[in-house]
Length: 397
Ligand SMILES: *Cc1c(COP(=O)(O)O)cnc(C)c1O
Image (cartoon, rainbow, N blue to C red):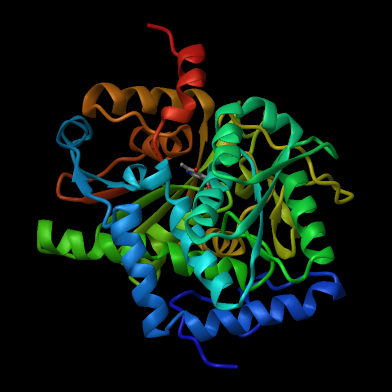
């Protein structure tokens, strides 16, 4: 197989330290192998990269701005920069991976795309790209989420996707992912676009690769704006870990750059209603990878909770399990109320309404101290339009 030079701390079998790998049913082996070969073949192919870069620019609207938030900087006594992924087409970073993956599907001659979605952001991004490229699209979504996220369901349908409600388990993201994998087993001619840096190798590596455009741009933009291309801190929220992987990617090998991940504590790490997988999880296997998982002592996956549907996942990408346990990344747990407070601060001080997921990263400003000369980059993974209802129901003033 062609050697692909990844900047990630990953081995030949797709392990990041003890985490990762590909724990898949026999029936998917040839599929996953074909995907790995296609990814390594095209990741560095000039024509493929040219097509990806052009769509990033002309369709998504990249580069997304790196914005110095002056009023926030003053309040926190440091230099706060926001990477504006919220300004991308469809409102979040998810479109970067959806486009890269769909281009790969097209190269592999696939005509039918499968995806899972929780809040619906990944489903919308995939449905969008399928409309753009004329591909059939089936999106699995927990029945509970179909009800909670009606506007995104309508968007996917308008874009021509078939949305399949999943009635098993808790009827949320984990169950939708199981169903998408089941579909892939039955339809090996289809291409499965996963929504985060999770799943069997090569998915975590591949999704991180397509999202790495975020940190590549941060370097260029910092060099132009400050004369220095590495920040002191990069902060991102983690659900499965794709926006964080993209924001960290080009800094993982730079020991001077502190990486900070914000996971969702829900009502508190010890409340029993949390999605803080790195804090409360133990080693196990979920959706094809060895990683940290929220589970009972006998291995039953426990239900995650967060006010933010995009962070409500009982696992974590293997890259982040490794960065956290090796000490390379610092992980903070941010509660619902801390995230709501941070969202309101950004809204009233900078005129930007963030996604609830991104608000978890912003809340780190209240939980850490920074020097006055530090450069602190926060990845603003998405916009808050989809969360207005939750904000209005929970913020009083
Ligand atoms: C889906 C989503 C997330 C969480 O997913 P990651 O893979 O951890 O990035 C974060 N922010 C927004 C805006 C999202 O839509």
